[in-house]
Amino acid sequence: MELDFDTCRRAATSRDARFDGVFVTAVKSTKIYCRPSCPAIVPKAENVRFLPTAAAAQREGFRACLRCRPDAAPGSPAWDVRGDVVGRAMRLIADGVVDRDGVPGLAGRLGYTERHLHRMLTAQVGAGPLALARAQRAQTARVLIETTRLGLAEIAFAAGFGSVRQFNDTVREIYGRTPSDLRIRRTQPEQDPGVVSVRLPFRAPLHAEALLSFLGDRAIEGIDGREGEAYRRNLRLPHGSGTAVLRPGDGHVAATLHLADLRDLAPAVARCRRLLDLDADPAAVDATLSDDPLLAPMVLKEPGVRVPRATDGFEIAVRAVVGQQISVAAARTVLRRLVTGDAFPTAAELLELPDEAFAMPTARRRTLRALAAAVAAGELELDGGDRAETTARLKEVPGIGDWTAQYTAMRALGDPDAFLPTDLGVLRGARALGLPADPKSLAAHAERWRPWRSYAVIRLWRSC
Image 1 (spheres, helix red, strand yellow):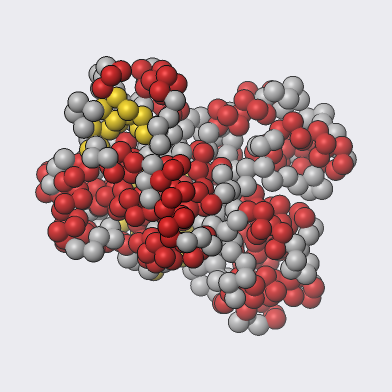
Image 2 (cartoon, helix red, strand yellow):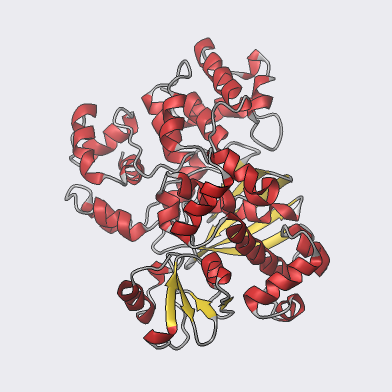
């Protein structure tokens, strides 16, 4: 897949960081690929190609630039926003589904044949699922090489490679260095076993306080919480438990990950990025919202507000049900009763809880049990599922209406255009900004905010 040459050339010549992760610059004369913002001398036009992903560049024999680290750029906002099969596939690959379940497992989750899935991904992102997973494994390996004291053989298997030889060949091919050479380039101090520090880049601006205050206000004791200018979150990962401490900084979020099993590094990174909405394009969002003169002053005052998302879709759906018609503080108290350990319960675990753990009306307890039963049976996919299908399926659960389904779509499914016109906080915020303050009129007015109505919801909540 080739991108529009002139547009990409202008972005790369101006070293525009907003395009990092949107495409890579592949230099034919050196066989190296870079971010658009790479500080190196801009190559001649006849010597470059523009490709949509690092995996596409690697597939065609280009090596990653060791100066700008294009493999560590923010993810493309296109794949983050899209709810179609390609967008879902990109998110599932980032979460490590191919490494755990292979391409058949990925195709099964998406409901397509392996051949058709490979064809769609290659056509739109320049590489198939195996190549995309391989690129991710290489990046995971580089992080472990440069930040841990693990032996190289341990790193090979922790990163998901099938053999040490495959690990050595892949690292040499992608970085033009052996694993031992990369270890010499170590840029961070060694960490204790199981601890990995990584930088999670984002497209500026990012309104860190909006994220921290939202998550901190809804924290459940023992599961997550705000710690000054950082946020701590316990994680339930495919191979074990983990904890992430996330501290927003200049152009990146510093993440300190404590992992029981280092094979969970890539899923932990993907989930932290998703939680903080780090692959968003704030310039595109804010440009649309600021076209509304009633929202423009707030956008100007607080640029880069993100949608706090989720590390676990089922947890968000439970939070949405519990939060029906009660305050944030009351919901937090009720949710704490559901937690028996240091992780939020799975659907199967929630079904085993006694009735007295549900400090809520009987009807709401039945709704939670019905929701958990659907998730446990595989009838409802809240992590990587089709957005429209999942939202419709949620409304079939007794006790779940449009507000709960839209809230879940916004935070668990990553829908950038969910809207909650009946939410009391949204209506209070609308009134404070001089917007229509009844649900029907506000919903009509909000049509001008598409496709970013989820971001408008967060801003309205901040205004109430």
